[in-house]
Image 1 (cartoon, rainbow, N blue to C red):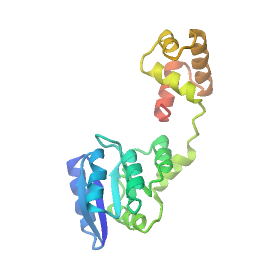
Image 2 (spheres, rainbow, N blue to C red; image 1 turned 45 degrees about the horizontal axis):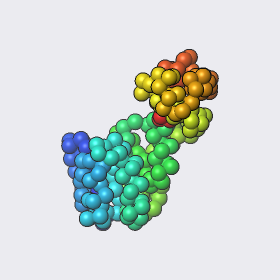
Image 3 (cartoon, one colour; image 1 turned 90 degrees about the vertical axis):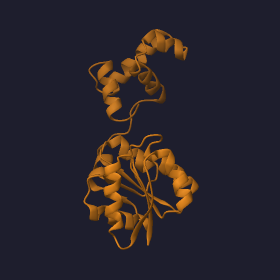
Image 4 (cartoon, rainbow, N blue to C red; image 1 turned 45 degrees about the vertical axis):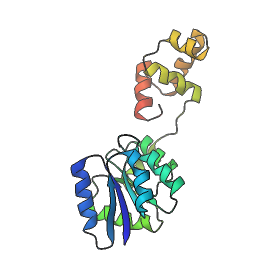
Length: 201
């Protein structure tokens, strides 16, 4: 019997997933939680074989919780569910060494089979999500450029950023101009939108 912990904050969705998995003769949901910071305590208490985790959870996001499980309970495998196949999210999931990554609207038999595969140590990545990760580009920005763009995205002026980072205003403008060029953006606002959508900020 494969013991499963399920983490999903939407009550109806969680109930449906629990019911679907419990219909399988070889799968048993031993714990269900609604927030990211409840995952590790529940996993320690119930020792599941697989943790099925929604990527967007209150308290702590699903990927952070998955990393905690890998560090604390290495025998528990993780399967991340997402409703969004954004390339940056997929890359983060792969970097976090999750065992599986599946779209939330996948057919129920696909979810059960993914749980079975993950339980025996196989890697399961939804083909649409894998393609999104394959097609995305690595971030072309330097850590300093990301830092400055992040401050600009939060509404800080060039003068504010210069004061915060002990730089001259001219240097900050040069960094922002370089960011706009690297991202092929029309202007600073467009650059912020591109970087945000790619999850580089």
